[in-house]
Amino acid sequence: MHQDIEDFLLYLAAERGLSENYQLSTRLSLEALSKWASQTANINASGQITRELLTAFLAQRKQAGFATASIKLVVVAIKIFFRWLTQRERIARDIAEVLPLPRIERYLPETLNEQQIERLLESLPLEGPLALRNRAIFEVLYACGLRVSELCSARLENLDLENRILRVTGKGDKTRVLPVGTKAAEAMDIYLRVERPQLVSKQTRSHLFLSVRGRGLTPDRIWQLVKGAARLAGLPQNVYPHLLRHSFATHLLENGADLRIIQELLGHADIATTQIYTHVEQKRLKAIHFKFHPRAR
Image (cartoon, rainbow, N blue to C red; front, side, top):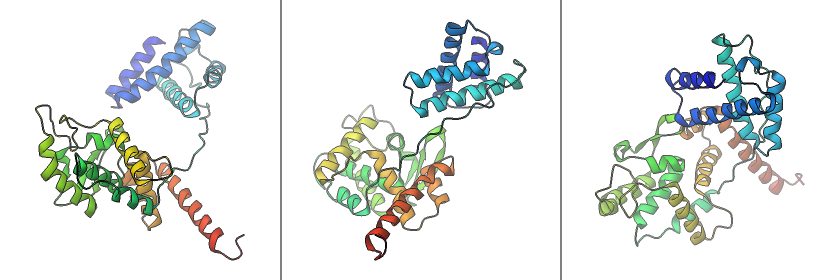
């Protein structure tokens, strides 16, 4: 089974071109199965594994406290592995085909309303150390709905301020082009002309946003900035960088944007991921109806 796993991972890398993170996740899942099968049933060959053994392995994962989302990743890895083994005729039949995927409970994303976003942005200092950089960061996070990783990896050569567009690389190394709003473009322009040149050092590359040492910012630093700004603005709820992305999508939907457009802007591979924001909007509409309709209560 060990050799089957190595050959399968080579297939994922060479023929499918899947990311290193995906390959690592798949390796961990399959090696855990291989180790468990060897220790509990003295099975070391892929063809000896039964459907009952797979079910028992997944049950053990659940009993060990693995989250539903983690178990789902394991199931997916097992299913594609055994499908590949069947296609390569290394086993007689695909015993994992009928394995059900665990159902993940969907939670509605938290959001800030438009007034709270305005309050957050307007509370940012206009002067002082890194004030221009920080304002540009917040404006771009909300204007473009960026993931923190996308913000940290954003490059100078991928920003076109004249046409107000920013090219970013998201999950799965997928690139998308995003419009940059007027206020975000203005904040970026001032930061790039006035403050960024002062941060450049020998270690500086082409990162859009620089630290005091002239290097790219880390996700942890962005978290610190957002938390600090939220405290300064006196916002009552837990505010974190991804909350700005959720708010970006929700406000677009509330103002009439098409769900497919929002999907493209967020970089979601599946429209089902974007559809969760429709539930946020439905919840808001129900609350408004309950509050204002004379016969709603």
